[in-house]
Length: 231
Ligand code: ATP
Image (tube, rainbow, N blue to C red; front, top):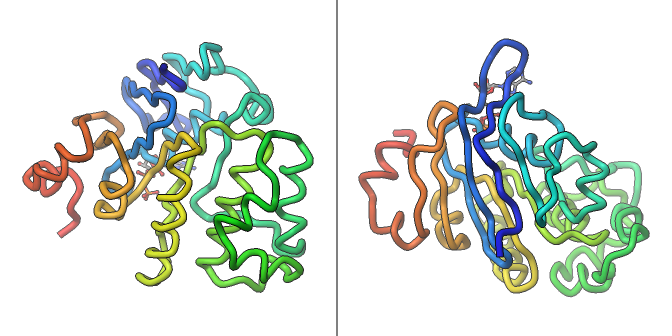
């Protein structure tokens, strides 16, 4: 079943068009990744889905309902979770308080479930989030995004700015989550993305230029070279 369907959206910042006729689908239980170079429109795609930058044309359907012009909070109530690129954990609140706010909205996951996936967070439960390392904050942001009835997690650059060892921790955690969450993720780290994803889309200058199974892209180094590799 299709959980999320983006149908031919055009999204702008003022006069500047960031997305051109972008269509993509995420099915129940899938991990789908959007790849592309800096400025390709990956973050903008997630912002259009969560409602921070509504498309001017096209539509977005979540669980069969047209959400194109709904408020972000309504989309969250409907079952979308969002982990922004800069994480945005609440620094002056403790780890536990950061988790309690979405947990109190309901849903069938508990804070204990999050601690089971990220045991380190339980040890840090009473620390202020601003004192956590980058990797710990990322785990907190993901944990927070999973609570409150999330069915589809929108994950922006989970690996960005993290040391390789920490990226490995995040990779392990996301592998565990794969079984219980549908994920649409944006990544610059192609290796991490292909390791986790079932399917991929590649954006170039706001347009989808490729979509296919992760295994197919893994075996197409020339496509990665052409559209994603920086060097
Ligand atoms: P990155 O990995 O650098 O975040 P991205 O693929 O996520 O790249 P977007 O952030 O979606 O790319 O940006 C797409 C285009 O929209 C770029 O040309 C960018 O300069 C432009 N853009 C992004 N945010 C804004 C903004 N707030 N105002 C104006 N233009 C913006």
